[in-house]
Figure 1 (spheres, helix red, strand yellow):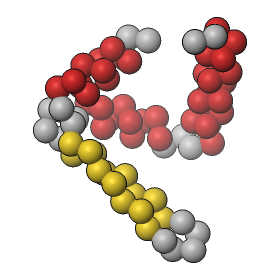
Figure 2: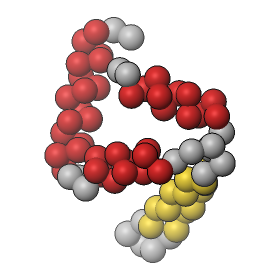
Figure 3: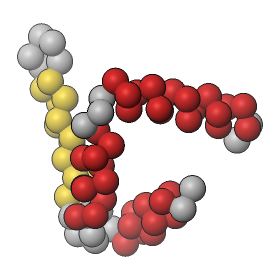
Length: 72
């Protein structure tokens, strides 16, 4: 990854988290609770009340990736 793009990504992520201050603590708590076999569900409700829901079942490879991301 281009170092300038990495800096831009960090800046955008910081701005996003400033706009949504509850998100980072939620993810920190969730990551501590997630383990192999956990199910993560995401639900989006649009302004016109349409709902989209999806989920994933976490496996050990996912957990290994999360651990690696924590080191970055």
